[in-house]
Length: 128
Image (cartoon, rainbow, N blue to C red; front, side):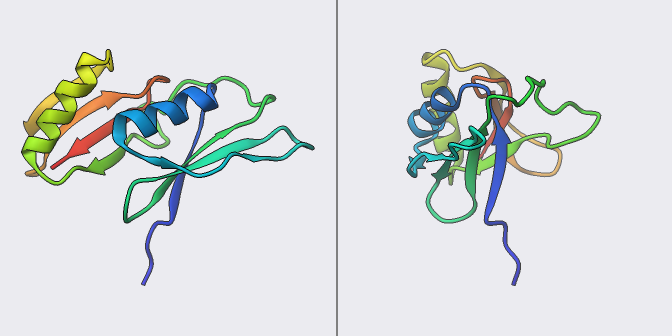
Protein backbone atom coordinates (compact mmCIF):
# COMPACT_ATOMS: atom_id res chain seq x y z
CA UNK A 1 0.00 0.00 0.00
CA UNK A 2 1.30 3.46 -0.90
CA UNK A 3 0.84 6.46 1.38
CA UNK A 4 2.30 9.95 1.54
CA UNK A 5 5.04 10.11 4.17
CA UNK A 6 5.62 13.86 4.05
CA UNK A 7 5.35 16.98 1.90
CA UNK A 8 8.08 19.61 1.87
CA UNK A 9 7.85 23.38 1.69
CA UNK A 10 10.71 25.83 1.05
CA UNK A 11 10.40 28.74 3.49
CA UNK A 12 12.23 32.01 4.05
CA UNK A 13 11.71 32.20 7.85
CA UNK A 14 12.26 28.65 9.12
CA UNK A 15 11.75 29.39 12.82
CA UNK A 16 8.73 31.63 12.24
CA UNK A 17 7.04 29.07 10.01
CA UNK A 18 7.76 26.27 12.50
CA UNK A 19 6.23 28.39 15.27
CA UNK A 20 3.12 29.03 13.12
CA UNK A 21 2.45 25.36 12.32
CA UNK A 22 3.10 24.30 15.93
CA UNK A 23 1.10 27.06 17.65
CA UNK A 24 -1.67 27.57 15.10
CA UNK A 25 -2.31 24.01 13.90
CA UNK A 26 -1.11 22.07 16.96
CA UNK A 27 1.77 20.39 15.14
CA UNK A 28 4.62 18.75 16.98
CA UNK A 29 8.09 19.76 15.80
CA UNK A 30 10.97 17.37 15.49
CA UNK A 31 14.52 18.56 16.12
CA UNK A 32 16.31 20.95 13.79
CA UNK A 33 18.34 19.20 11.08
CA UNK A 34 21.26 21.24 9.85
CA UNK A 35 23.86 20.53 7.17
CA UNK A 36 26.86 22.71 8.04
CA UNK A 37 28.41 22.21 4.59
CA UNK A 38 25.43 23.47 2.55
CA UNK A 39 23.58 25.58 5.13
CA UNK A 40 20.41 23.51 4.55
CA UNK A 41 18.14 23.41 7.61
CA UNK A 42 14.78 21.72 8.17
CA UNK A 43 12.15 20.68 10.65
CA UNK A 44 9.61 17.88 10.33
CA UNK A 45 6.23 18.81 11.82
CA UNK A 46 3.87 15.96 12.79
CA UNK A 47 0.09 16.28 13.03
CA UNK A 48 -0.97 13.00 14.64
CA UNK A 49 -1.45 10.16 12.16
CA UNK A 50 -0.68 10.74 8.52
CA UNK A 51 1.84 12.65 6.50
CA UNK A 52 4.28 15.11 8.06
CA UNK A 53 5.21 18.56 6.83
CA UNK A 54 8.90 19.29 6.23
CA UNK A 55 9.83 22.96 6.40
CA UNK A 56 13.13 23.61 4.60
CA UNK A 57 15.47 26.57 4.15
CA UNK A 58 18.85 27.19 2.63
CA UNK A 59 20.59 30.57 2.62
CA UNK A 60 21.33 30.41 -1.12
CA UNK A 61 17.72 29.55 -2.02
CA UNK A 62 16.25 32.43 -4.02
CA UNK A 63 13.06 33.98 -2.71
CA UNK A 64 10.14 32.80 -4.77
CA UNK A 65 6.43 33.43 -4.54
CA UNK A 66 4.17 30.62 -3.30
CA UNK A 67 2.84 28.29 -5.96
CA UNK A 68 0.43 30.03 -8.29
CA UNK A 69 -2.48 28.68 -10.25
CA UNK A 70 -0.11 28.16 -13.19
CA UNK A 71 1.60 25.16 -11.61
CA UNK A 72 3.09 23.66 -8.49
CA UNK A 73 1.40 22.78 -5.23
CA UNK A 74 -1.86 24.65 -4.67
CA UNK A 75 -2.37 24.01 -0.92
CA UNK A 76 -1.98 21.58 1.94
CA UNK A 77 -5.13 20.38 3.74
CA UNK A 78 -5.58 19.45 7.39
CA UNK A 79 -8.56 17.36 8.54
CA UNK A 80 -9.85 18.74 11.85
CA UNK A 81 -12.65 16.22 12.33
CA UNK A 82 -15.85 18.26 12.43
CA UNK A 83 -17.53 21.43 11.20
CA UNK A 84 -17.41 22.78 14.74
CA UNK A 85 -13.64 22.22 14.87
CA UNK A 86 -13.19 24.09 11.58
CA UNK A 87 -15.34 26.99 12.80
CA UNK A 88 -13.46 27.15 16.13
CA UNK A 89 -10.06 27.02 14.41
CA UNK A 90 -11.00 29.84 12.04
CA UNK A 91 -12.22 32.01 14.93
CA UNK A 92 -9.06 31.30 16.95
CA UNK A 93 -6.72 31.92 14.02
CA UNK A 94 -8.51 35.09 12.96
CA UNK A 95 -8.21 36.47 16.50
CA UNK A 96 -4.45 35.88 16.21
CA UNK A 97 -4.29 37.89 12.98
CA UNK A 98 -4.03 34.96 10.57
CA UNK A 99 -5.35 35.82 7.09
CA UNK A 100 -8.62 34.02 6.32
CA UNK A 101 -8.74 33.50 2.55
CA UNK A 102 -11.98 31.53 2.49
CA UNK A 103 -14.62 31.39 5.22
CA UNK A 104 -16.01 27.99 6.28
CA UNK A 105 -18.36 26.64 3.63
CA UNK A 106 -19.52 23.49 1.89
CA UNK A 107 -17.68 23.16 -1.40
CA UNK A 108 -19.21 21.95 -4.64
CA UNK A 109 -17.74 18.49 -4.04
CA UNK A 110 -19.24 18.28 -0.54
CA UNK A 111 -16.32 19.20 1.73
CA UNK A 112 -16.75 21.58 4.65
CA UNK A 113 -13.63 23.70 4.64
CA UNK A 114 -12.02 27.07 5.22
CA UNK A 115 -8.80 28.42 3.72
CA UNK A 116 -6.13 30.39 5.59
CA UNK A 117 -2.72 31.74 4.62
CA UNK A 118 0.39 30.81 6.55
CA UNK A 119 2.85 33.64 7.32
CA UNK A 120 4.51 33.28 3.90
CA UNK A 121 1.25 33.25 1.96
CA UNK A 122 0.90 29.51 1.33
CA UNK A 123 -2.71 28.31 1.18
CA UNK A 124 -3.79 25.96 3.99
CA UNK A 125 -7.20 24.24 3.94
CA UNK A 126 -8.91 23.31 7.19
CA UNK A 127 -11.41 20.51 6.58
CA UNK A 128 -14.11 18.83 8.65
